[in-house]
Length: 208
Image (cartoon, rainbow, N blue to C red):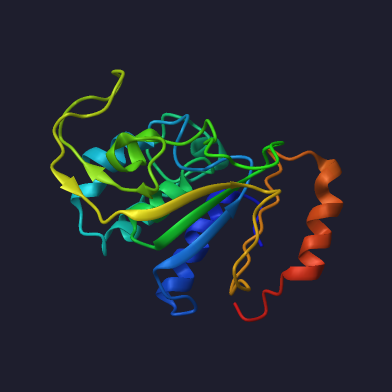
């Protein structure tokens, strides 16, 4: 249980380093936002620098770049882990074996539609309808231009990806770990009783 989304990234890193969890993780992300990097420029650092580093070294490199304050973290020009891109960097660290994004859409069913906040640069083949995510590395200076890089020098392994509206999602088996964030900057205080109810019913931090 944490206050802010980006904190989950570091909690995972600590748990993986301490063998409390084992990568890769099959992740179900229930949120109004994909947290895959849309809205910031950290993808430039990911694609032009981090992607060329050994996947085993990437978490430590990101941990060393951890913002020193909430103000610094919320700076959209900051090329570090943030509330809006932490899953992008979890993918880059090789922590994910699959990702299902469960959205709060009002739709009854997904029907092939995709949320509008997916980072197309992370979609395999830069295709928003792709069923896999993939980190690529490029030295091409395409940042700031419309479109995607033409020269790709590195590709991580692709990771299965799916989106589901909450009305139709059913977990195929019980979860091993539940991570909960209050997200006070994005959630009204009126939602606190719901947060407290989830904590009481599902969250037990004793094993951690």
